[in-house]
Structures are given as C-alpha cells and as structure tokens.
Amino acid sequence: MPYGDQGSHQLGGIYAAGARPTPQEAYSWRLYSQAVIIAMGSILFGYDSAFIGTAIARRSFAASFVIHEDHAADISSNITSAFQAGELLGALLCFPRKGALQISVVVFLVGAALMVCATHQLSFIYVGRSLTGIACGAITATVPSYIAELSIVPIRGILTGFFEIAYQVGTLVGLWVNYGIDQHMDPDSATSWRLPMAVQLISAGILFVEAFFLDESPLWLMRNDQQEQATQVLERLRKLPRSHPYVAEELDMIRIRLSEEANFAKSVRPGVPSLCLWFVGAYVKAGRPADNIKAGKAPSPSTAAVGKAATAMIMVYSVFWSFGLNGIPWIVSAEIFHGALRTLTGTWAASIQWYGRKH
Image (cartoon, rainbow, N blue to C red; front, side, top):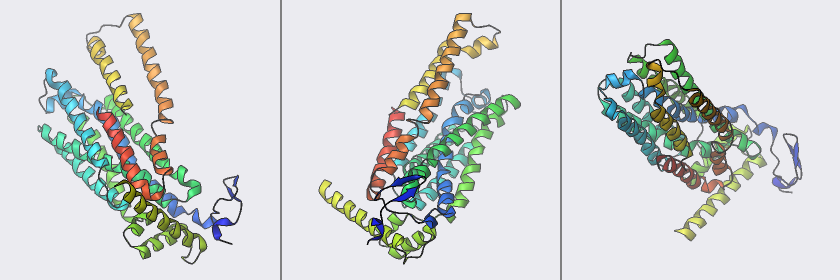
C-alpha cells in the first residue's frame, strides 16, 4: 500500500480521513524556528509602515531639512510615494527564496542607513525610503510563499500566519517608539526623528545574520535541477532519512507540481490602508487640533464628542481589519495554490497590494 494511502490520521485532534499521514518527526523545531526567522522580514514591513508618518511630521525634521509649512504636505507625500513605488517594484522581483530574503535585507539596511545619515539632504531620505520600499515589497512577495514551501501540510496555515503576527509586532513597535519619543525627548532635537529611523537597523541586522542559517526552498532547488540539495533540505527539516517514504513521496509531489507548472506555462504563454491614512490626515488638516491646543483653545463639546467617536470607530475598525483582510489574503495566496504556482501568485498578490496602496 502506498505511504499516502494509509487511511485516517490525527491532525491536532481532528481526524482527516484519507489524508496523507505526517510522521511526528516532521513537526521539528528546525521547521518552526525557520518559519519564525523568515517571518521576521514582516517586522521590517510593519515597523516601516508605522513609524514614518509621525517621524517626518516632527518640527525637528522640518528644521533639519529647512522645510517650509507650505511645502510640508508635498514633501510628506513624496516620501510616502517613494516607499510605495519601491514596494511595487520590489514585489515584482523574483529570486531564490533565501536569496530574495537576504538581498532584500541588504537593500533595506542600505536604505535605512541613508535615512539615518541624512543631515540636510532630502535626497538621502527619498533614496533611502525608495530602497526600504523595494526591500519591503520583495519581502511581502517572498515570505508567505517561502514559509509555505518549507512547511508540512497540517501546519502550513499556522506557520504562514507568522507573517501577519510579525507584521503586527513591527507595527506595534513603530507606534510605541514614536510614543516614547514624544513623551521623553525634546521634539526640537534631530534625534527625535533620527532615532526611529535608526531602529530599523536593529531588526534588519538581526535578520541579516539569522538568514545565513536558513534552508533554501526545496521547490526552488528542484526547479533548478538541484535534487541532491533539495533532498538534504528535506532530511534536515523533516528529521527523517531520505529513505523514509514520507521524504520520497514529498519529492515526488514536488516533481509533479513542477510538471504542472511547465504545462501551465505552455498553455498560457486595493488601497484601504491608504484610505485610513488619508482619513486621519484630512481630520488633522481640517480641524488643525494642534494649532488649537498650542493656542490654548479648547474644542467645543460637539467637536470633542465627534472626535472621540471617530477615534473609537477607527480603533474598532482596526481590530477587525487586523485579524481579517489585513493578514488573510497573504496567507491564502501562499496556501491555496500548488507549490509550482506560488512564485507567480505570491508576486501577483503583493504587487496588487502595493498598487492599491499607491492609488
């Protein structure tokens, strides 16, 4: 009887009749740890999305780069657009999974360093922001598929979900870093905008070192005629010898998927986050609460009540967005397609995401 036809087996307390049984050894700490390391790329993406708006809105940033109030909105838009254009470009770049992650981190480090080193040159900020955008775009196109290709089927959705968890961690860190700076640092000091930009280097540096210990995707290795290396990777990840039926069957499944990919090639030859940012920006520009507070004016009771209600609705919306549309599309695009198509679908999903944010 073939190994994959041994009847029912238990998956986390649920019996799946006729599904391919998974040996206990395949649930290895090496697999979990590599998924965590790969998902750390999303921390860069989350932090970068969270910290920049507050950092460039500080008086010290305008003073450092001699930005007049009349041009502040345009410059802020240019910095945001540079990042999003870079993300769209990065999402379209395809490399080996491990190589893509390593290259992305190096590009991110260079971009972050340029932003930290900038003194009076806005060009450093624009170029640095574009480079970090390219890196984040490539990361979002790579991480979910990379994790899915290393994972075993029963826990593939869970491990791919690390992408969203890491993204939210990065976002949370970015928001709290800015909050801490607002509470404990001189807002007129250049350090108040330079420090949050420097924090980018910490997680990127850690990921750069850890990436050397990752295994390449077996699917990518097989696609490039490196069967021996793919077999060795599966032996390490599954904690099983190559003679084990589970490993042999997984290699056969990859070959079938690559064949499907070849046949497919022969036969064939949106911006909700931006809306949220716009809403907050419009509220600040229209109401100018900072000017009122600075002048000692108290908002009217009706204005204050509406402001509190709007803030509450944004928070409620964020709760449902966070465990819904914000993360599920990334997981689904990496989970539901055959391994041979994940490069295409992951790239497409990421590029559409960044195109939607840009427009």
